[in-house]
Length: 89
Image (cartoon, rainbow, N blue to C red; front, side, top):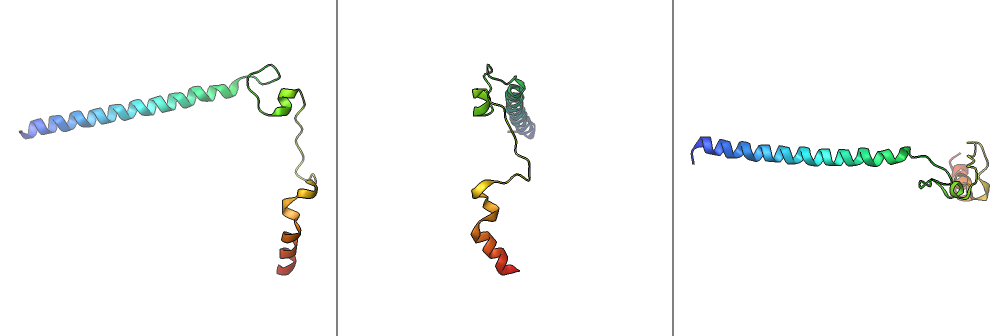
């Protein structure tokens, strides 16, 4: 083999590698874009998109304010954590 043939084979292999890489990249990006369009579908009782169970049942979603009490299972105010804070002070 002469150097010109080796260079031709190397360039063809590099071109094939770049072409396949670009194809796979375009395929993945295209799928992500198409799959992302499903987020823009309307929601509601008759829609195929269900974000939570209360929406499907016809209820209204209510968010709690940040200062709302969390009930008896407040993980930041357990006796163990309050005891550790008391020891450090």
